[in-house]
Length: 156
Image (cartoon, rainbow, N blue to C red; front, side, top):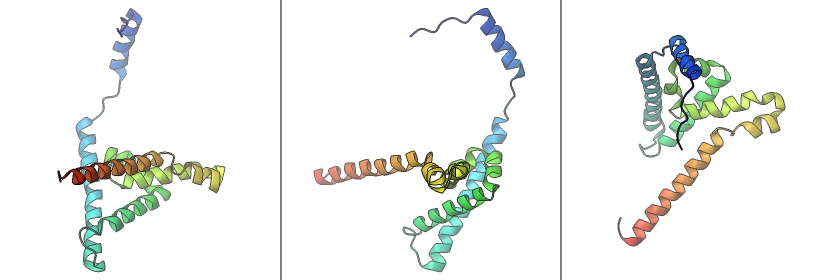
């Protein structure tokens, strides 16, 4: 599939567009995302240690309550309108950790609450996050199937 050559008007438009295009502070944005995402992970690690030391979880079992706590906190902050400010400041730094999942679930629910609780909130809550859940479950199934086959063959 060959590209069609650009007309002189299209080339002139590209020159004008580049002249007025806003320059993005790439390094600044990357650093903000890195440090905010890292700080969110530090908070998660603090919750992990809290569950280990105060509630007698092991390192292996403290992960689930930590994830649930972080998702709950992100949902709570989204409900109060605070996580949106964090997302505008940090960009992907607030979206990549598990807190971004909680934010996406609640944001869709809040956006459609005027349509009612069942059809609005319930029907749209997992619009974005539903595909993530399905992909995660399917991926876990495929990995478990591959591991089972490898164990049966004696490779593992």
